[in-house]
Structure formats: structure tokens, C-alpha cells
Image (cartoon, rainbow over all chains, first blue to last red):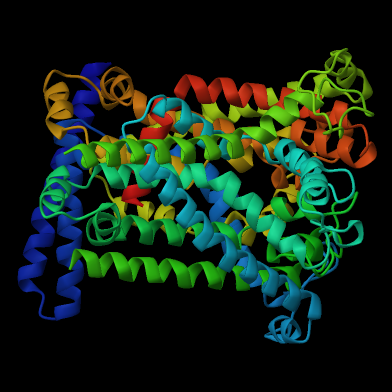
Length: 353
Length: 279
């Protein structure tokens, strides 16, 4: 059996070699350049076939290597492709369509985007998201930097304090927002109780933390509390990268704590601060659950004073089934994140240059 | 010399006072949660005088929450989802990352670019088309949808690749000369070496999946498919004044995350710091 395949193989090789020499002769005789090129291509094909037959392997070495590499990537890439890449492409297309999810799709051009300008609920959502962002980003940055500087000192129980500061970040939102709603309860909560008993704020002017314009303020306070531990860790890593000699030299020159901060810590941390601000801004743009859980009604609906962009995307898609318009709102979110990302890349490039 | 010494002491005192304030701010909500979970509805808001543990602690809140809503079901669903997602994420990400970091193959840069390009893309931008697609695939209202949603993140591949690139190529090269296949190099050399990165990924994925709200909200509609976050939220909106029960449920929902966090804490802090700086 093996002998037979062996002989058939040698016949094949002979055939191929004959075809090869014949084509090579034809190339020499051929005058037309285009035909010549075709024949040369043919020759290389014969050559690779011959090599494969002679070495007795189905795949070349590189092809085999590629296949092994792809087999490593495939499990993740297929999932990633189907559940992330395709929906992203779909999202861009959908922004220019009108669709309710079951009836035929119609092309709308820029109409969805034109509608945005006249939509008061969208404008409120955009405004609140930006106010939330403008409040949360600097406050969280300052709080986490201060926390990092304090916890970078040699103090007893440093590890415990770090863990404590970090825990709000991993704790589930539903659980901790329900505590916050109790603590800040307008009529019964301890915060307002303290304001009433110790600061003599009259009953009728006690703050309504989760309605009206105070909503966004509550969201900001809550976010600072929840996220400062996370950014503190990033700052701690930054602080540990500052060479200790700088401080020693400054101390010898008689620079006090504030001067050391101003002339050493702050400039040395500029790239960390830049990164923290970018991350914070992007995360603020994506806010949804904090708004729904702090300010949402029983079934989670938000009024114009507390609505945010992602809530509006959700509402337009899954309550009104206006998928095209919802995607147009999503594109606004995407553009905002894109701008911040481009700024980040520019900043990094400048640093590296 | 004396005044310098005194200055240092004053500084220390200020630092400790600040620390104390921060610690109080950070921990008060959790202490309140613990305390309110064992109080009756009448005692919950009493702060004058405030008692941390009421004379008759109402431990029954921790029992009642399991019967008032299908809490065990929610906990079971969430555990199932979290464990499956975390395992899949670890396995597929580290697998793909090995290839990107240590193998040379065609279209490598192109494929990796696909991952990089989406890392900055917020999920909220494409969650709607993703839902439509999954509904078409018959995944609506199935736990499998959440698995598909969470298990294949660009973030995981990126994190693992960063780590693998720090492992010297010579190590793989030597193993190849010894006749190991790529799969053996991955399981015997790379995986054991990448424990810190894997631990980081475990916490990120575990915490994210356990705490996720919007994903399950979109996909899981039937009561007995809900996760603990959805279930708690549902309970809060139905019985908004049953504070003791709400707090007891909240306490319970924090325990798994707390355990995971305390176990892997060291790695987590390192992981945040390193991914943070590399951006």
C-alpha cells in the first residue's frame, strides 16, 4: 500500500517536473509581456507544489505556525467579533436609519441627528451629563490625590486604611445607593436630622437631596465617595515612582511641605493626573446606574433634572423602540469619548516626543 | 532642633486626624448598613440617641429576605454567571494574549488593532444593536446572553498581553528547542508565571459581573432568571419602606465581593496601578 502511494507520488513529481520545464521553455519563447508574467506565476505554483510533494507535508511551515497562532486566538476572537465588532458596525449604520425592531428598516439620512437639536429631553440629558462630569472629575481627582499623599506617609495601619478607601469601589451600587438614600432621606435621614438639630436649618428648607437641581449634586458627592479609592491607587503608584532624593534635596534647601508638593509632587505626577482626568471623564460620560438608583422613581424612570445620556439611549431603545434615534444619541456619546481619547493620545505622544 | 521635632509631631497628628475623618466617611455607610439590617422599621431612623446594635437585634431580617423574594434563586443565578464568565474570560483572554505576545503570524497587527480600536468604545454605544443581534440569535431572556456579553472582552486580552510581553522570549525559545509544542509552553510555562495578571483579571471580571446592573436589566426579564442586583432593585422598588430587609439583602450581596476582594487584594492594587500607568 505504502509502496503504491510511493510510486504514484514519484509519478506525480515527474509529471510536475515535466510541466515545469515545458513552461520554462514557453516563457523563453513568449514575446508578449503579460502572457510572460502569467507563465512565470504558473512556474512558482509548480515549484511550491513540488516542494510540498517532496517534503511530504500538506502545509508549509509558516502556514502551520499561523494555524497554531489562530487556534489560540479563535475562542476569544470569535466571541469578540460576534458580540462586539459586529454590533459596533451595526450601531454606526443604525444611527442613519429608522427602525422599531420588527418592521422594515428605512434610511433616514441625517434626520435623526437633526431631531436631536430640537429635543429638550436630549438637551437636558446632555447638560446633566456634562454638569455631572464637570463636578465629579476635579473633586474626585483632588480627593484621591490627597488620600494618596496621606496614605503614602508612614502611618500605623496604612494597609487597613487603603483597603477601607478602596472598598466602596468594589461594593455593588444597588446596595450602597440604598444606604445613601437612607442617610440622605429628606425627612427621616440622619444627615437632614443633623442639619435640623445642630445647624437649625428650618424644616421646610431642608435639602431634598434626590429631586430637582440637588440631584446632580448628590450624584457628584456619591461618585466622589465611591471612586476616590480607585484613583487613589493609581496616584499611589505614581507617588512611589518619584525619586526620594528630590525630597531630600528640597528638605536640605529648607522647602516646607507645601513647597515640596508644589515644586516636586505635582509636576512629577503630571502624567498620572492626566491619565486620571481622562479616565474619570470617560467614566462620567457613561454614567447610568448611579442616576437611576439615586434619583430614579420606583420603576427607575428619570425626570429631566436627573436624566443622563445613557439613560436616554436606554429609554429610546427599550421603552420607545426608536432604535435609529437611540443610536444617534449613542453616537453623541461616542463622539464625546472619542474627543477625550484623541486628547489623551496627543498628550501621550507629546510626552514621548 | 526642638522646634523641628515638635513640628514633626504636629504634622503626624494632623495626618492622623485626616485619616480618621476619611476612615469615618468611608466606613459610615457600611456600618449604617450593618446596623440597620438588624433593626426594626421603627428603630431604623432613630438617631437621638443612636444605638449601633439595638437592644433586641432583629436577626430575622437575614432570614426573611430569603422568603420574601426568591433570593436564593437570584444568588444562584449570579454565582453561576459570575463563575462561568470569569473562567471563560481567563481562559480565552490568556489564550489569545499568548498568541499576540509570543507568536509571529500573518495579520497579527491587524487582528490586534481590532481589539485596541474597541477598548475605548463604551459598551453603552453599541448595547442596542448587540441586543437586537442576540435577540435574533434567540438569546433574549437567557442567562447565556450575559455570558456572551461579558466573557470576551478586549480588556482581558490587552491586560494579559501586556503581562506576557514582560516575560522574556528566551524562555519560550528554550522550551521550543526542547521540543515543547506551543500549547505545552502556554500551559506549563506561561500560565504558572502569569498568576498576578490572572488574579487581577479574576477580580475585575468577578466584581464587574457580580455588580452589573444594566446588562441583566436589558436581557433578563423573567423573575427566576434575575441576578442579585436586579432582584434587590426590584425588592427596593416594591417594598421601599422595609429598610431592615433592604439592608439585610444589601449586606448579603456584598459578602462574595468582599471575600474575593480580601483574598486577591494585593494583586488588585498592583493590577490597578500597572494597568493604570500603561493606560
